[in-house]
Structures are given as structure tokens and as C-alpha cells.
Length: 400
Image (cartoon, rainbow, N blue to C red; front, side, top):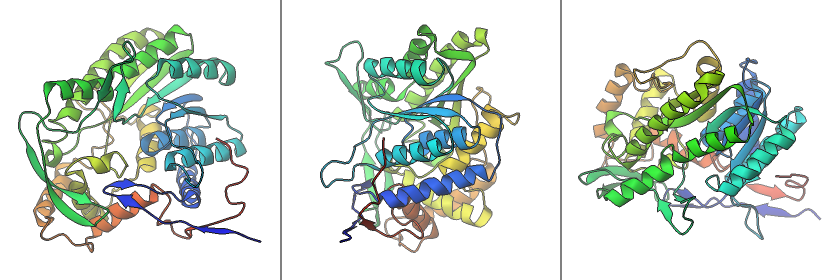
């Protein structure tokens, strides 16, 4: 007798608490198709993605494999299925990517481990030596984490915070659970909180990875590494660019300069990519960010130019990292966010933002509808053609 399980979507605040694996499988197919429709490009062959289970990291694996034909190794830190729980979306993204990549004839290895741990670095080096011909030619660093254990003193745990510096900031933030816009005041970070955020979200661990891989002799000639960063518009500057996260990103840029000096003699590169605003699990907890995105998405619906992570990262890889159409700023950073931050787009966004307030917000806003749909699809819901019903056999034969 066929058994069916009805899946219920659950959102607490701005955090998803449920998952639809069938929707995630459909989203994986959709993203693969978007890449293959662009054709192939000469790119990396053996790729390590740190944070490869969702968003920009997953997009990097997709374009590397289905655009450039690369073998990939991903390190994620996701909740596996256990008992009646289906686990996290990132777990299923890794499973479905592995299945699709192997069916296409590519190596796809997944490690469910803490990216910050020295033990994880040792395990990755062994994987590269065993399964990837002894060397990688691209490392993607796509990590957004709430905490990091001090690798020198394991009793110390650094916790990142999203706070302004110097003064409190008040902004309107979307509450997805209750579908309303609420005013939120965020107090300024302490010096200790700022330092901890830089430890977690800066480039310190990125440097440790590159040094460990180089010392183990597993970096190919002309090896490249890229860290994904964010600048943001004037509208979000008080809480982001001028706050704790912005300071962490400045620290990452200093790391890039040191790594560039290290890698240049062998023809390597250390790159910072300042990416555009997109809907991710991490971005939805940034105060004020969702309100800005609603305005941006509404403008882009009228003018075009909207990109989800896989579209942006595929463009970044094809045109900038491995192509000859690099858009660089005066600090040498790649700028795939240039269209979003253009004066023409930002002028329209700034006209629209004052109209989106807690008092005037409605769920009919086109930007809100798109934002909510993209957020739900991160967990496999609201995917066209996919039901919320699991049947016997739907999840059989799948391996991590």
C-alpha cells in the first residue's frame, strides 16, 4: 500500500523550519538547465567550495560542473534527516547535486563538517589527494556563519553579530512568519562583538585554508581563490557597510592582498567578489535588508536585470574569473553588483523606499511577493509543478 506524507511549511520569524526535498530537486534541475543553456566555458577542473550547500556556494558548484565540466568537493555544515525530521535544505542540495553530477560523469564529493575546524582541513586535504588527482585549481570561500571556535584555543568561541557601530540604528524589517513590516532598533556593537565578528566573518579562516592547502602541496599551478563579499547600497550602509559586517569584509580584503602576494609567484590569484543583493537564508536576518530588497526587486521587475544566485555566479565565473570581461573597482575587487548599484537603479529604489513602511506595507507589493517566493523556494516550497506530498520511494537510493 502506498504511503503518503503531507509536508507542512513552517517559518519562525525569518527562519525556515521545514523542507520539501522534491521541490529542492526541481530547483536543482532548473538551475542546471539555466547553466547548460549558456553553453560551456573554459574554467576550473578541480574545485573546492567551502559553504557549497546553498546560495552562492551551491551556485559555484553548479556553474563549475555544468558549465566548465569540473569535479567538485564541497564542505557544508547541514542537519541530516533523523527520525521524522527531513533535515535541512542544504543537506538535500548536496544529495541532489551529487546525484546529478555523477550521472553527468563528474566527481562530486560532500563533507558535512565544520569548515573552521583544523580536522576538516586535514580531511579535505586527504580527499584532494585521493579523489582529485592531488591538486585543486579553484577554492571558493562562501561562508556566512554565526560562530567560530578559536583554532588555537578551543575553549574560546567567537560569535558574529549584525550591528551598527557608534550609534543605534532603526529600520523596518520584514517578519516573514506574520507577513508584516516591523520597526527594529539595533544597538551599537561593543568592541568585543566587533572583534568576534571579524574573526568569524573576515578573511582569517580563508587565509588558514590557503596556507594549509599550499603546505600540503595540493594547489595546482595558476590556482585561483575567491571570497564572496558584499558592499550594499547607501540605504543599508548604517547596518551593513558601516557596521560590524562591513568591518569584517574590510578585513577580508586585507586577507586577499596577503594571499595575492603568496600566490602570485606561481601565477595564482586571490580575488574578492562583491556580489549583488539576493534572497538567502543569511541575508534575511539582516535588519532593514528585506525592505531594501522589496524596493529593488520591484524596480527590477520593471527595468529587468534581476538575478538569483546561480545566474550571478555563472556570469561571474564565465565573464570575470575565467573570462575577459572583468568589472573591477578602484580597490581591485570584482563587481558583479555594478548594475544593481548603478545611479539609475538606485535613484528609483530610493524613490520607492519611503513608500514601504510598517504602516503602508501590504502583501500585494510585487517586491514582497517575489522576495517571499524566492525565500520559500530555498527550502523547496512554492516550486511550480511540485506538490507538498512525499510518497514511498521518493527519497530512496539517495546518498550524501
